[in-house]
Image: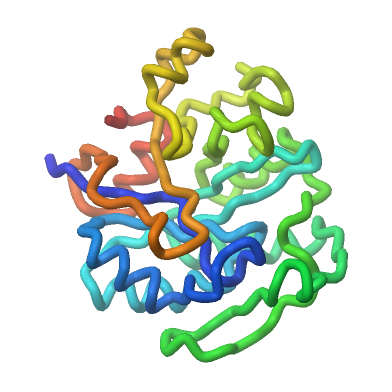
Length: 241
């Protein structure tokens, strides 16, 4: 058993709300500097920078959990974790039919870049990624699971873009066993307002939009082995600490 320092919610410069400094190299090197063992880059509704981050993380001895932050039609943010780049690319292919394709206003939101492992531009996404898809919550959860992924409601303590703020509850029939808390609260404070979720498992992530926000060694997961497969099983039903 090992304790792995994790940050499972980091945005790259592909997310229009993230700093342009959030390049694949900068993310991985800052994660290394901060002593993280496992990271997940979860850009808004797109996987474009995962290939470069994966290559760089491997070179630095950091485990990358492939991820994406999907926004449902109810404006709920759902972290989607997958066992491989190939499997999350299947999700990307499916998402193309659920985008609203609203043009990105770069003068307001900034450009959305896909970069290579040298931080050189490969492609610019021209439609705004921080808008909801046309998938509702139930459709999104089903799609992620059908493709082998694990859905985790994001920042459930927040007053916007969370499953609790928008629905008032985590529907029991969705069997969402792991929830994410933002870095701005603790389980103890959350349970004061929501004691009904004390039996759920929680992860705490940075939701980093700039390099300084990436977590230090402050949240740990107990892993039987250092692998993506083990992480996926923990997020499905395993014990998280």
